[in-house]
Every structure is written in C-alpha cells, then in structure tokens.
Image (tube, rainbow, N blue to C red; front, side, top):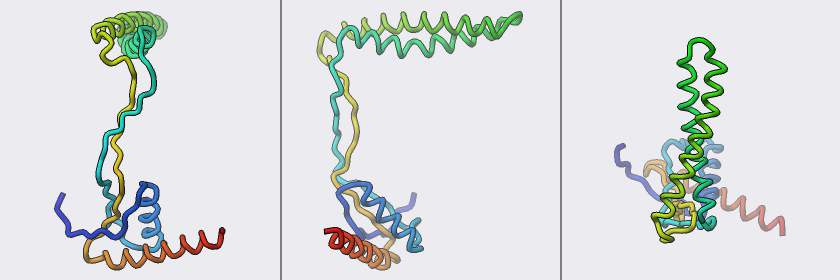
Length: 162
C-alpha cells in the first residue's frame, strides 16, 4: 500500500459518527475511495464476563471437544460402504459424546493446573479514543466544506428539536 499525502478533515469521538460523515460524503457524490477512517490512541479493554470454576471449565471443555468429536465420527462413518448414512450419523453421535467427555476432562485438567491464577473469563477488545476522517490532500478542502454543511444541518436539526 503506497503512502498518500492525506489531511484530517474531521475528528469524532465514536466510530458511528465518523461512518456517518463518510456516508454523507458518499451521498454528496464525493469520491469516498480517497478517504479513510483512522482510529487513534488504541487501548486494550478486557471486559470480565464471569467467574470460572470447575463446572464452567468442564462445560467449556465439553463444548469445545464435542464438535471436533462429532466431525471425526461423521467422517469415519462415511467410510462404511454398506450403510453410510446410518453409520455416519451414529458415529457422529458417538464422536460428539466422546469428544465432549474428553474435552471436559481436558478442561478440568487445564483449569486445575492454573491453581486459581486466572479464575475468570473475559473478552478483549481494542478501542480507539477518537476517529479521524482523512482525505487525499487534493480533495481535502472539498470534503471539509461538505462536512461543514453536515455539521450545520445537524446543528439546525438539534436547534429545531429543542
């Protein structure tokens, strides 16, 4: 990807606002392929979603082992030439059960090996603190003028609603 000479034409605190600005530019016939939305000041946010105990570790392991077990059982069932449909479904069921049991045991083993160091579940995301809409230098002035009209229209709408 080549480095382009770009200028910031607007800055927004949320992605939907930046997306709305680019959508407005598109609606006005502006060549949006010459713009980009850039997130700045990234931070890692780890949202804790719950406590993990032996039960949840076993359940999580069982869930992650069941699908591969069913898939392997189904594939082995397809190799039976006499009655492949019944055989593959039955072996998929056995594989699901076997995979869930093995997965639960592995989940319990891994949880007990951690010795309480991380007994919570979480979801990690990267979140920017602001979003900048940038445009190629040749068209940045035109884009800025269009976005100024969007800002004026939004201000007029807010004033009318009050």
